[in-house]
Image (cartoon, rainbow, N blue to C red; front, side, top):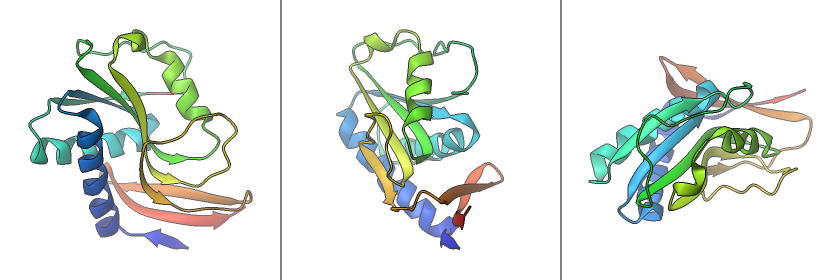
Length: 160
């Protein structure tokens, strides 16, 4: 079942970008997109933040399930806010693994999580500060964000 189309996702991501700017309080914003779909969302957020704010903003991709540590390409200081971006939050495991890989994370002024879809069922104490959509699911259901040309295109609910 299709829950959201490209137009609704774009409106949601634009709203999320404004919320991220508010959370950052004028500081530099570093977006880290987890895996392919989180990075696509981070890139779209970066685009909207640049259009609507003077805050410097950068985005990078981190593969949360790799064995490598991750070093940011941009300098980090106390005036930088880190936003961990993922498409869907479920147990919190991917975000926890991604955060664990980031070296120098103690230098950020603030770290928070932004997700397009929160489907509940947390296993770890990870919560998103900026959420596009809350879509409560059953454990046997799956939510998938599909990409088209590198941009979130649809949100689909399926049963296993």
